[in-house]
Image (tube, rainbow, N blue to C red; front, side):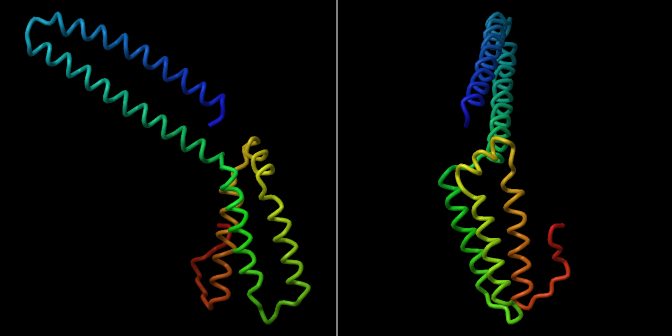
Length: 166
């Protein structure tokens, strides 16, 4: 997580703790001063229920922030692994010899693959992420479409339900 987000979450957490603490102290005093044990029990149960609700809300907020962060962040090692994997996939697809594909078309396809792979470098993707680049949409969706098309075309499938870029 970046420094700004970490500080923001820490500040929000501190504020929530302060308000929860003062609420608990006031409720605890009310419970202590209750006339009957039943009243005390009800007040303590209210405190426990409130704390459990706040815990669930905090977990929900934390998971939401984690999901948002993961949508725009990727580790350096993952970028390198992603690049290697995409290169292998494209190489497999490109190397599959089609009787109708000329040497020139094969070379052109390889140049396209190389150009695409040039985009998948740590510095490039990190910079693009700072600008809001959604790598899962930009890379994952087209790669899914290419692989699906390859499978349907090359393995004899004629799946009418497949619609690339839909």
